[in-house]
Image 1 (tube, one colour):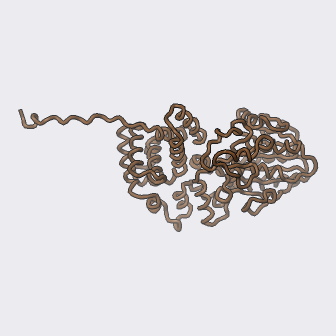
Image 2 (cartoon, rainbow, N blue to C red):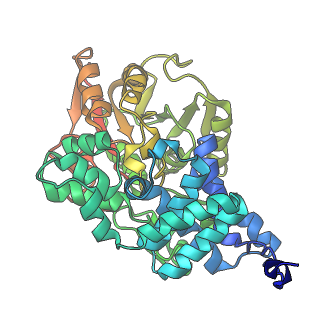
Image 3 (cartoon, helix red, strand yellow):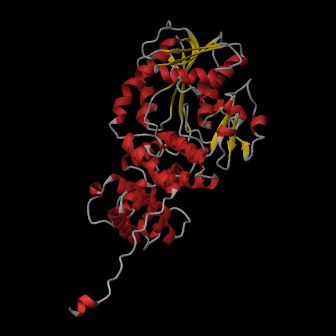
Amino acid sequence: MSDQSRRPHKPHKPHRRPQKDPVRILAFEALRAVDERDAYANLVLPPLLRKAREKGDFDGRDAALATELVYGTLRRQGTYDAIVAACVDRPLREVDPPVLDVLELGVHQLLGTRIPPHAAVSATVELARVVLGDGRAKFVNAVLRKVAQHDLDGWLEKVAPPYEDDPEDHLAVVHSHPRWVVSALWDSLGGGRAGIEDLLEADNERPEVTLVARPGRSTTGELLREEAAVEGRWSPYAVRLTEGGEPGAVEAVREGRAGVQDEGSQLVALALAHAPVEGRDALWLDGCAGPGGKAALLGALAAERGAVLLASEKQPHRAGLVARALDGNPGPYQVIAADGTRPPWRPGSFDRVLVDVPCTGLGALRRRPEARWRRRPEDLDGFAPLQRDLLRTALESVRVGGVVGYATCSPHLAETRAVVADVLKQYPDTELVDARPLLPDVPALGEGPDIQLWPHLHGTDAMYLALIRRTG
């Protein structure tokens, strides 16, 4: 018998099962839904969190961490992709999407949270073992150990081109926005480095939950009795939940007497409601009413004056959401499913008309961070004909002396001033109304007569509004 055969046999290490971490598994599932199904995190995450709570897997701190991991990863995806690309030996497009999701979750924990580096790496590797297998977990471990060698500022010095060489690409990498979006927002702001950096940074901040007390159904006083509730900045109907409050826990919201609505959307409705009209003021139209937030506020304001609101929405399921939002309105109203470009009503029927048109949504990137990675410049061409058609129909639907509000949740000039300018060339019997005096407490609304709200200046979505009066 050889010496080698007499050596004692070393027992194999028992195979250790990976430790399942409910928080990180849920965050990974949410990111996969966003990637695979083009889902929106703000729609995917709440039911996942609710299910986890019902199973007893989560408490409030777990839910807060899962939410931070999902939204933080999506907001900083562009920056994290650039960092991961510097740490792998292949083009990023050749990294399987589920592996990339795990890596980005790990990078966010390393560079975007206070989680200690060793804990961030080990927790992410354990997640990889659970959802990817041991082989890919080794790859994740190797990449994250490279990432952990520098902090975020150190990595940005390495992966972002100098501002002096390429300002737009520098801002795109540092602030995690596609280059074309940086360029478009910069044009809308009108130049200057400080403004665009402030805006891009505001897009990456977690927005507060803002509620609206629907007149005649709730009051801000009622909402302010909620924990961590403070007054809105600009709208007399707004209340902010400052510490990530859960709107579903608010009785008035559950009952539909109040709603979740960004203050920018409230201001658009208020400006249209306050605009002076000549003559009667009895019939209002919301021509693109889904999902119903503006319609509910307009309906309540109309009721205070004895006016009636017609809320029209093309998609029947969204018309159902509008009907739900208006249920209990203190005055008469009607909800219909109709195509706003081929309306069933007669021309000149309305005294006030709002069209909040479909758009790229570049003004709501705080709330829907994944939208920045989905949108393409060519999407503008897809929306342009519809936006112009809806504005034309709105102008034909309002009577002489009445007012139309054209609104978008995008500050892109191709969706705002370009649309208004093009359409008004075909309607010489119109005039722009200066909207700024209608919101006297709101600063920095632009050069007028239209108004542009901004996340970094007003704490709202980047809503745009032009008011147009029919003169003949």
